[in-house]
Structure formats: C-alpha cells, structure tokens
Amino acid sequence: MNVIVSNKYQAMLTTLDVDVIKSINGEFTPGELANQFNNFFYNKMILDITAIKDYKQIAVIQELSVSFDMNKVIILLDDSEEANAPMYLSQLVSMGIYNFTRNLDAIKFLIDNPNTYKDVASYHNMEGVASQVPDMNGIGGVFGSMKTRVIGFKNVTSHAGSTTLVYMLKKHLEQAYKVVAVELDKNDFAFFSDESLKSISTLEFAAFVAMHQDLEAILVDLGDDGSETGCTDVVYLIEPGIIKLNKLIREDPKVFDKLKDKKVVLNRSILSNKDVSDFEYESNSKVFFNIPYIDDKKDHHKVMDEFGIALGFAKLKNPNGGKSKLFGLFK
Image 1 (cartoon, rainbow, N blue to C red):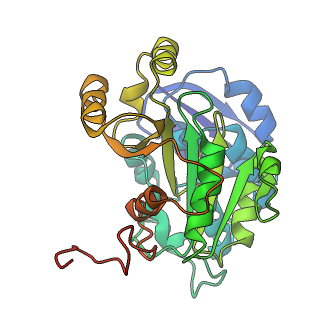
Image 2: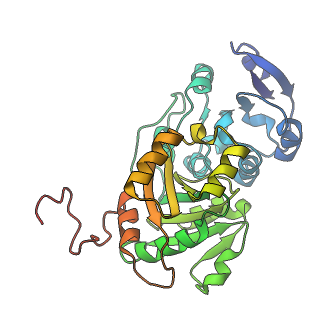
Image 3: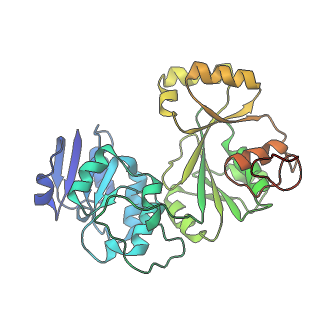
C-alpha cells in the first residue's frame, strides 16, 4: 500500500489508480513529514513537491533526503522554473533522489520500476552548466558519463573495517586518480594523522559532493549505520568470522537476501578460495572480492591494487608490474 502527500496537485493525484493506505494534504516541513511517517509502514510515498514548505530551496530537499529512504519516495515535480532548472535536478540526483517526474503515468510505472542512477544520469550535470532544461515528461534518462564516482563503504557485520579500508584504498588510488576520502557522522579518521581525510556530517554530504566534482572519486566511510543516499555505488563489508556471522544471522535472518546482486566484500578475511566458494554456497550470495588481513602501516599492497582494479580503477599499476592489460593474453 502507498501513501500520498499532496498540495497543489491534490485533484490530479486522487485520479491515480494505485492502492493508497493514507493520504494527507497541505504544506509540511521535512521534519513534520518524518514525524508522521517514520514509523508508518508503506510501499511508496507519492510526494507532490509543492507539499514541502520552501521546496525551491535545495537545502530543504536535502533535509528531506536525510529524513527518508528516497528509494521509497516518488516526487511529482511542479511546473515552476526553479524546480525544473538543470542545477536543481542535478542536485536531486547528487542526493540519491532518482524517482522524480511531472507525468502521472510515470508515477504508476515508478512504483514497480524505480529508477537507478543509470536512468537519471543524464540529469547529473557535473560541470554545473546545462544547455537546456531536460524533458521531464519522460520516465527515465539516457546513461551519460559520470565524472565523479561516489563509492560508499558500509559495514554489514559490526566494525568490519570500513574506515581503515577507505584510508588504504585512497592511498593506492591517489597514485593514479584525483580522489578524496570522507567519513560521515564520526571522527575515526583523526587517528590516521592524515589531514587530507575529511570528517563531515550527513547533512553536509550533498554540498561536499557538489564541491568536489572536479575529482574522479569520492570514497565514503559509511561505518555501520551511515545513509547510502548520494552514493553512486556501495561496497558492503563482511568480516567472515564465525561469531560475527552467527550474530549477523541472528539479528537479521534475511540479510543475505537483501544483499543479493550487491557488491559484497569479505574484509579481514582468512578464507581460502575454497572457503569463499563454501561461503557463497551456504549464504546463497556472490562475493565481489576477498580481502585478507593486511598491514595498514605499509604504503603498498598488491591486493589493494587488485581490489581497486576490480572496482573499475584500471589506471592502477598492474599487480604483476607494468601497465594494466585488458585481457592479459601476453605476459
């Protein structure tokens, strides 16, 4: 069942042929909506953007993105110049808000077929300039090249090493890429004595991404509970010790169902290739990469090069020496 939050388009939304469990009308702050719906179960929220007080201010939409799982929200844009400006739409995408349209039929489609970044990448204007306002009467977008990759690293088992892994991957990537590492809502980076590492709040994240669009990658330490909103990709870390795995399964028996088709990385792992195969079989999941215990005091590790290349950073030095080759046919 779905909920509808309407204002200017109340009459139009009443004609929408979807199952509705609750409908409210008026103007609300993101905080007021969060108080009403954070403990309310629903499939999708269909949100008339004019129902948000001061919605033309992107900071207000940023507050909304922090308060809600935006994968469950479909925003019906109005016809205002501000809410359809290229920079406004680009900032929506930067916040991880992918489901927006001005088309009533598109709302019905998005309920069962939510957009991914690929569908709205054409609205993500990384240069801050667009030649024209995108046609919002359609449902999705055409895949475009993204200049900055925003990759989140999230612990699935508690304290699975996201902070140290982000720090070490950043050190490897910066040999060939313009990259920055940032942690959200914590200050663990202080222990690395590296002033290039950034610590900010979730509320500052969208602005941080916008300010670093000249970079090729932003690595984000999400810790155990950080919001994935704004990340173009997320790596899910599991420390595969028996105690941690048993605790994980007891807390959430369906955790591996939720991780299906996601980048699951074993970190601080002592598993052999055969052990990884057994893990995949028993958990009915696919492991993207297996990272062993590594010494974070050393500057370079072959496995971190391999991990970076697996993530698509092909300019890293080949772990076997020399330039990376596409197929490695000739040694």
